[in-house]
Amino acid sequence: MKISRKYFWYLSRPEAPACAGRGAATLVAAEKGSIRGDILRATLLSGLFSAIVVPALLLTACGTAQIVARARIPPPLIEKLPMTVGWHVPAEFASYVHKEKHGSNSGKLEAALGKGQTEVMTQLVRAMFEKVVPVDSVGPQADASIRAILEPSIDEYSFITPQEAGADLYAVSIKYRITVYGADGKLIDSWPFTGYGSVPAAGLKQGPSIERATSLALRDAAAKLASEFPEQDAVKNLRVGSELEHAP
Image (cartoon, rainbow, N blue to C red; front, side, top):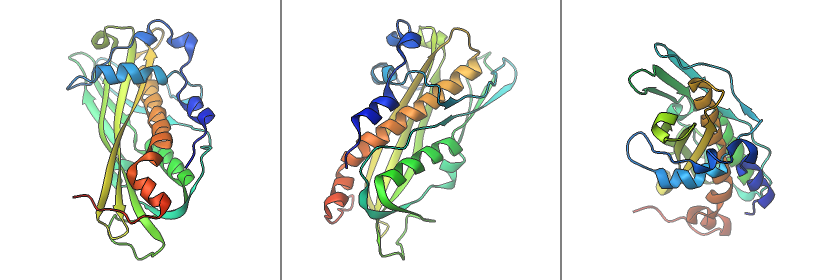
């Protein structure tokens, strides 16, 4: 499978005017356990994009901010693999909401990612394979044409504020995973990947800032799924028609 270098650049390019200076010096930590080095490197790819859908919702000191993150992406310019795969989206993934009280005076945050992340990943998987069949489980399939079953999951959602970052920006990381099962329902492989997003704090309230950074992180994850997943061993074996090896 080939992915257009132009397409990957379009998904990942930073917006230089908005991110130069402060944004380029991003230093970010997950809520528990530092991932500063990874986010410092990857957040430079995230940028600001006019295609992000960002309702203006505020995070107040006493209330709960409900943010919704979605990312529109252009049709991927990739060569489809000539095969059929099953696509299982768990209910908890499709309806995922991250709930958190962040800091002593920051109120509560509810970040609804389920619908947006399901739409983005379904779009990309359909672009990667000739035929994608929605399935109800990862168990053995009656459809003999299905070579493998793919299942998305979210491992972690984290965000930081300017006070924590030591810089005038908000940043988000979302850790995802695509698990590959054989048509017999047995585990083949599990591939983790992370999306990063950051926005300058100037001129924006905390709620809209986190929402925009979340949408950018989802978009960054989409770029990695499109460019890196086809190079995983399980997908390479599918490409050449090799028998899939079950995980130990």
